[in-house]
Length: 296
Image (cartoon, rainbow, N blue to C red):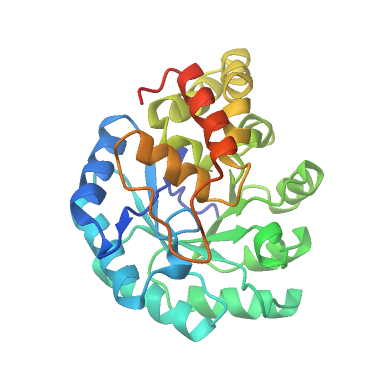
């Protein structure tokens, strides 16, 4: 049976405004409001871009609770609840369901990794604990662990596992996955430079870093495609390619944090082991932002 789609279009993998005292909730709230007012289709809280792995447990939970409250059902809120500690991921997932998150984004385990059998067992255990749909997050370049297409077929059998954020970078694997899972799992691009290619094989949208800067435009890229203006959508993909590359010239979220600081949405403050962007790289990023019409 086809599962309900969590969102269609662009979801921002939102940065978390931080300073030396912790999370800046005033800036966080203004950022959430601006994203929604700009036409974003959903928000992901405490994912990779939100520095979820360096937030304290208290901060992580409060960011999710705050985002749900601030968003007030205007768009879906997707909580990043993945961990290399499955028991913690289950606990965080239960909490996020209780405070009203609309879905969970659960990454493959990092450092200790897992076999495909281990991934199936882990994701099913987390999904068993959830009352909201789960988006599986595959990003092997960061975790050293990849979900294989055949594994998605097994995971699709769980009623709470509804979608995939696919960031493996391998379009052939994504095509294979789409062919195997059909309409049992929605697929979202996890790479901003592959939005249109993923849409072309049935993808429902993107979970985006680019949309931190350009929420309206990223959403429109998807909308144009769905409305049949494939050429217009592809043109936007091409137009923002250099900006996308600049946003990933250093480890995410280092560049996007610098970009959002230039836009006045947060301080350029990161927690170790992340450090501020190299000056030469930042100059290129700023140049590409200006070319894209972003006010700095």
